[in-house]
Structures are given as C-alpha cells and as structure tokens.
Amino acid sequence: MAKWAPHLIGLLTPLSAVVSLLVGGWWMLTPIVLLLGLYPFLDSFVGSSTIHDVEEEGKGHDLIVHAHGFLVPVVVLCLLYRVMIGVDSIPLLVPIISAGLATGASGVVAAHELGHRRPRSFSWWLGRLDLLSVMYLHFTVEHNHTHHKHWARKVDPTSSPWGRSVYGHLIRTVPRQLRNAYRIRPKDTTISLSIEATLLIGLAIWGLPYFAAFVGQALIAIYLLEFVNFIQHHGLERGEDERPNAGHAWESRTRWSRYTLMNLPLHAAHHLRSSTPYQRLRPYDESPQLPGGYYQMFWIALIPPLFNRMMQKSVDHSGGVGGA
Image (cartoon, rainbow, N blue to C red; front, side, top):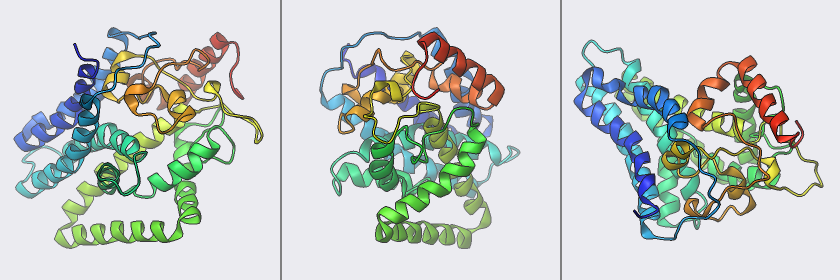
C-alpha cells in the first residue's frame, strides 16, 4: 500500500459534512458523531506508531492536502444551502456544529500546510480561501512571522504557559494574534479584515440565518485551531536566548490523529524545519508525549483540572520537560 493512502482517511471529515448537509435530517449529526465520538475512541484503538522513517515523496500526499483545501469552501456552501432550503425540525445548531468541525479539523489543517507554500502560488491562495471560510485571514501572517520565530517563548501569544486553561488561552490569544498580524503587516491585515467585513455584511444583507450559520461554523473552527495551539507548546517555555529544540513542542504519535490531520501531531518536526511538507515530518524522541491523541485531548482540555493532572503525569513520565 502506498504510504500516502492512510491519509485519505482524513477526507472522511469534510466529505461526511458535505454529504450529510446535502441529505439533511438527523444525518447532519454524522460529523459530530465521528469527530467527537468515534475518533477519540479510534485514537486509542488504532494505537501509536514509533516508526521514525519519514514517508516517501509522491503526488498522492500533495493531492490529499489540496483535496482538503477545495472541500472547505464546499462545506461552507453546503451549510448555506441547507439554511436556504430549511432544516425541518432539526435545530440549526446541528448543521452549524457539523460544518464547523469539518472546516476546523480539515480546513485549518490544510490552510496551515498550504500557508507554508510559496507565497502567491496557487496552493498559497487556496490556503487563503480556506482561512477566509473561517474568518481567520490574519493567521498566515501571525503564524509564519511570529509563532515560528518565538514558539515556546512568553512573547508568543499562541504558546500557553503551564496551568492556563484552554478558556483563558482563547481570551488572550485571539486578540494578541490579530494585533501582532497588524503590527507585522498592517496593510495586508487591513485588507484581510476589510474582505472579511465585506463578506459578513453581504451575508447579513442576504439574511440573518445565513450570517449566523457562517459565523457559527467559523467560531467553532477558530476554537479548534486555538485548542491545537494551546496543547502544542503548553508549559514548554524556553528563554529568549535559548535555541529551540524538539523538547519545546508536545508530540502525539497516535496513528488516527496523524492520518486524519496530516501529521499535525508531529509538531516538533514542523517547527525545526517549517518548509518540510507534512509527509516528511518524523517523530523526535526528545519531544514530550501528549497523554492522548488530538481527538482525545479535545475532551480532556475542556476539563482544566483533568487536563492539568494528565499533563503533569506526562511531564513526570518524561522526567521534566521544557519550562514545566
């Protein structure tokens, strides 16, 4: 089997959203059941991989990330279509959550990968379209120019200190990232905000249900993005003059999270060389290991005392890491 084949599983996320939104009814619960119910279980059931070999190069990997990129705006359009034809007796919140989980778990991951491609290339623009779909166009500027320079430092708004909850992280990180993006690229950020504002005004004129549905799915996607930022460097603080190393990023080797999220859990490898495509990322023995896969960590992070206790156990098991 080709080494890119397991990553096809990740396309189930946006495809399930597209199909369920078109079919309607209680089928629209499908992405919710998959991502929040089945996938956390599969994180454990499928197990982890300790293989250090990187995957082979090939067009398959590239086609997969672009497929994710194309499907994101399709998910949003299907959501708006569902609002237009009606949701019958199903609460509007159901298709909003389903779409948001898909645009977050699929779209933001694809936008992150494509955002590291050559600026102004087709792939880069596709990533920008994905970010527009979730109202987060400033992400590329802040991520590439601040986070990758200062990751695991106090000055980095996306790196959370030890003991902070995901809720406290959200309140702090979103405005700070926007401010950083404006400071670095004021013209580009202003244009991005203007485009987003124009889109929102257009949706509001079209009808408040469309506006609410679009904003709702975007907020869910943004939460998923910032949840990932929250866990990736939590408590792993480095000094201003300290060189970054694999010990400054949490890692998860669970196969299900790796296959469905395009190796996003191998985060240290991404930081040590940000231009490396996802199929070339590899595990590092120096990286502390998260208590579970990303889908499991979603639920754990929602309960701060449980999150802190499990992260502390991981730190103790590692013999102390980073600044924790």
